[in-house]
Image 1 (cartoon, rainbow, N blue to C red):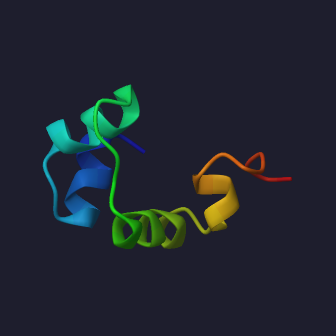
Image 2: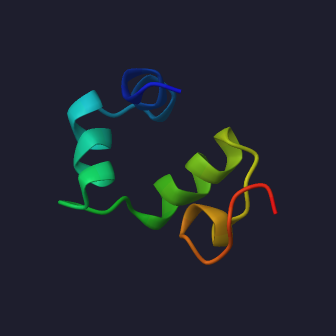
Length: 54
């Protein structure tokens, strides 16, 4: 999924998603939950405690 597509689903700017990916800022807990829902992933996967799809 592109940054702009994810940003649209979350109601944030593409720049915001880019900043998260680059580690310059961090999403709030509520955004992390929404990201997990969008990707049908666990919070452990989203936060890097478990590999995706394992």
